[in-house]
Length: 306
Image (cartoon, rainbow, N blue to C red; front, side):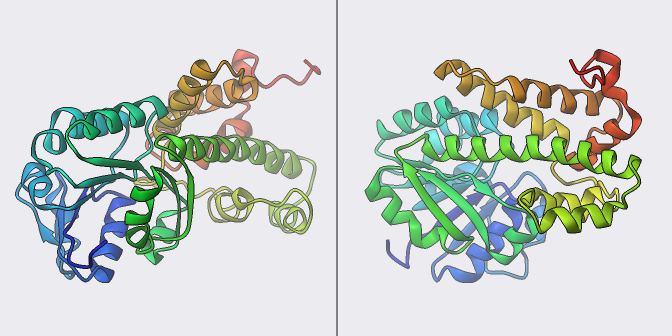
């Protein structure tokens, strides 16, 4: 990879904005950015990132195109029909930081390969704060030569980079990671409320469990920072995004023939969260369902040993 390569970055949302900022601050070459939101572009005005007039203009100039988009439909639109498909030059590489279905990542890679464009799925994990610090975890699916080319660029945004294998492996790792988080949040929610109702202060519960084998990233972050103070802000990862990722998990489960019984229960929690007015707010708000015992309405939270 040459330091003179031009990097394009499409998608400057909750995670994309901080990632693009780190790229703009650390990359010695040009950085071009695009987002539908003028406000998102203005937030990078204090960096060298150049606002692109359109995604097509960005794709035509960039040697490496990073995508940080809401999900599969947006990635498919950009890569198979829109800017990248029609304007990216042969020899460019697309690095998709979004979370998408595994099958889509592989289909996009095949389509772009016919145009001489390389593709890597490189979804990111950890929090917005980690994105701001450049301390994300990135899971990459790409042929070894493509991985070697983009690894120095991923170092701008991440402290942990895992090469999982060929295209699609990054999404497999990300979906497994996210599903474990979603399940852990639901389980922790139940246990916090159980401890409270049994007379133990939640602060004491989290402190004690964090010193034992029940400790987890979810406990130390989602539990302490959100569930304990019951702080579920907007413009964070909401139940709607959780269900999108869970749908991708079940697509993969269908393709591989793996039953996911626990995941089915967890999906019902987040569906119920939206029904009960918790949509649009940070997803650990699912603890409200346990507090209100609303899951019992459909038999999902039985107390009769079933």
